[in-house]
Image (cartoon, rainbow, N blue to C red; front, side):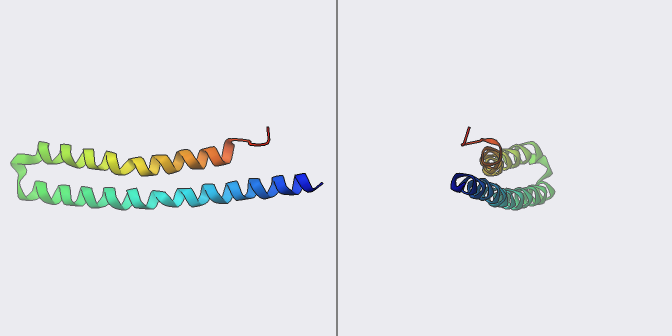
Length: 85
């Protein structure tokens, strides 16, 4: 009987951990918005350099997005990997 209660606690902690991991999605969202704003600002100042500015902005956004992807992977592992199987 104690084993089942322990299992429920571990599964509940996994669900809470998955929710907390998804909080990490806030950082990439803010970073990408900031990069897009600064990229638009730079294109407005120097329209001739648009292709180079956009390329650098998209590369920066891709790097920023990796944190959110890692958090999503951790959350999915915590939710769907059954350690008691």
